Image (cartoon, rainbow over all chains, first blue to last red; front, side, top):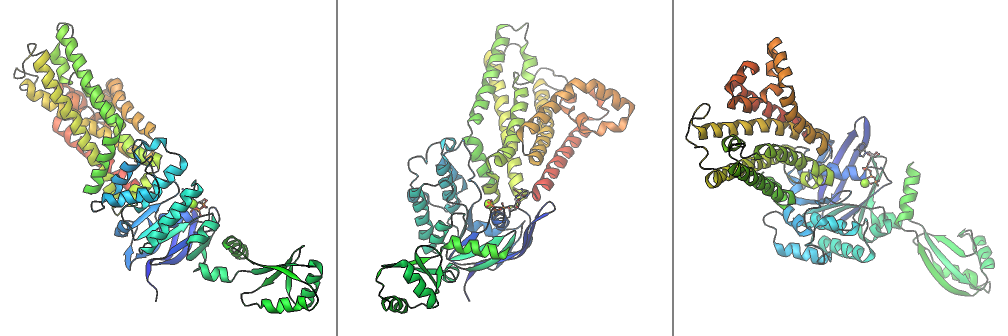
Length: 298
Length: 256
Ligand SMILES: Nc1ncnc2c1ncn2[C@@H]1O[C@H](COP(=O)(O)OP(=O)(O)OP(=O)(O)O)[C@@H](O)[C@H]1O
Ligand SMILES: [Mg+2]
């Protein structure tokens, strides 16, 4: 059995009369990066706030086998988080933020290397009121890591980051993951999440509709073979006649599953004197599969 | 708990206003003492010394403002999420803020009182003596008692402001209530006392307990408040505890 760092069981959450989380259950595997995906208002932030005891809830939460409740939550010693937008006191510098929340044993070398990895040296000692959106975001991320947490929860961490910062953040996350840190990350930028997440939780209207691995989800995806031939029109006719499923359009785009045989396709065409100049593979990405999943869920 | 308290102190020290407040208080005292030094007849020093050379009222305003902002800034900046996403319980988070306010108000009182003593010795030493007869005991004893009563009364307002800040998350409402509470009392005390004369049970209302610092200085006040000094003291402590407790109850289940 795989090691579970966090187990959430039958969590329900209300804002006034409105039920925001409906029997939410999932678990996070230790040392893995889990992506939390869903439409606006699906309940991603609320799930994260629930784990952090920022909002009252009914249900069970276990961290490394220990139960946690809204009022008694020692687990938070081992969790770092950035929720919604970064928590920043404008009158303090970035460094002062990190010092403020760093607990006794945290060495300043740890803080330094964090600053270095996120490339924040240029402004870490100036007052946060002058920070740009991306600078604030990076400070928020750094604060989530400052106490060497076992689990890091990041809500839309790529918000406002430029491509360079994005890569720095990704490198930091992967570096920490390789040291055994577990992650729960929500993001709307699915192409970014696809580069990071190993597991996926998909939520819709307050419910978990699917918990799976990235690999499984993508494998179940559609694959396409795109051919560039001497006569695309004729090639399409031949392949349809041979029983292949083609996507309509100018190009010869064949929908296949994972275990197709390219040789068979080529033989079909060559025997009809059609030259094949180029063969390309196309895979549907995470965005495609998530959209498809959410559409079928509704 | 100690960690939370240290975090609160750290934040307070990093605020620029903390430094200004001390500077403004000291300058006010120096100003008032200097004026009394120059015109002792028109502005006798002994009267001013009782209010720490006019800094006591400023201490009230500053304390109320800091009390409100220590709570509401966390909501305003969204930092409440980071503060609460630590292992400590909600109760401890709030208590650490009360302790910060306790430390801070004690600091302001001690600082302004030490400064007042210093200025008396340096600028207006000849005008009065600390060991002469005050209104009850020796003057210095009465001064300490007045300061103590002032402190307790201020804390009734502070606990109310902390409660309102917790409930409404906005500084302006909380500070207004505190400052208005302070002034309303002075403006409406005549009306309040006539109502109390008619309906004696109304003497238990919190506004009446804000008269503690007045009554300590002027004994005849007890004819109007219908309460003894000790009743006022215990009542004040009771109201402080009540307001703080309601604050905890509101904060315990709040979603942030
Ligand atoms: N303070 C609140 N009061 C009332 N309803 C709320 C509150 N916060 C969130 N909700 C509701 O809870 C639901 C889930 O919100 P949540 O913020 O968890 O969504 P999300 O998945 O994080 O969305 P997004 O992608 O936009 O960040 C929404 O329908 C929202 O209307
Ligand atoms: Mg959200």
